[in-house]
Image (cartoon, rainbow, N blue to C red; front, side):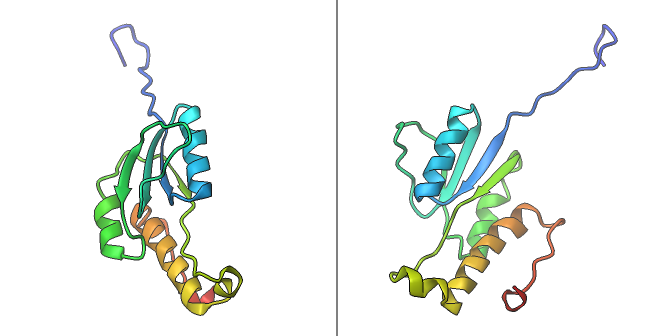
Length: 129
């Protein structure tokens, strides 16, 4: 409480972690920026935003658990996450049924979610999905 007896309200700004720099990632980044959010993008390459605005960017291979952990652990002020990252093989349709591609995408998602929310996630194995 302050000296007038009123409670002090602390407003935490919304800060979103966007994974991926493809079409969906760029669209999400632009929408969050337009809404006044702070944005951190994590992907292999920095996205080129149509608006030309700048964001905080971390180049991380999400397939690498140690690299993901090192990148995400310092990000303690993230309030939201938009997961748009994807690993695709050259032949799109065949790739979606590829066990290797499914396992790679599952690992990428796990490397983000488990690191960001370690106490609240029970991650099933790829075999049980």
